[in-house]
Image 1 (cartoon, rainbow, N blue to C red):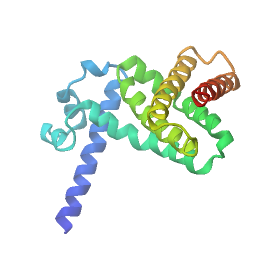
Image 2: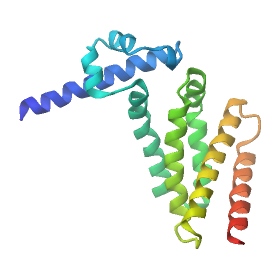
Image 3: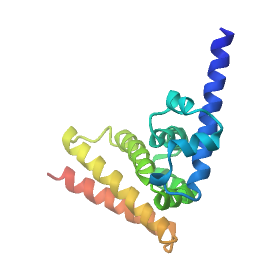
Length: 186
């Protein structure tokens, strides 16, 4: 039993070293130029340690960002009143802005986008649970809104947040309400 516990500690340490090394490399290099060899060398672990934990650098980044993004959304789902959820998601984007900028500049935005969309899908499914709409229409609406919300916030962050956040909240609320109203009217 002690060997198993010890092995888990070593595995967790290896994951932390690899994650730290990759994040450090991303400060000055694009993801597509970083190799596993560079990461393991910087982390001070073996190549085998990398492949025991991950298959790709994308997977390593996914493992790092997934719990942080999921925890933030879970907090919004569980503790924020319904009429304040969109504002809370906006705060998430403000807080997460530096990471989004780095992910855009260093070539791993697809990971952030995927995780955001997964969480927005759960968010919309939760708030739309009582709406009487066909599952197919609801699914397309959720995909449309998740992508739209992400792109609006992305544009706002990458253009140095020139508009007040309240304008962005209002725009997204109008788009949500008008698209849902059109969907329900058919």
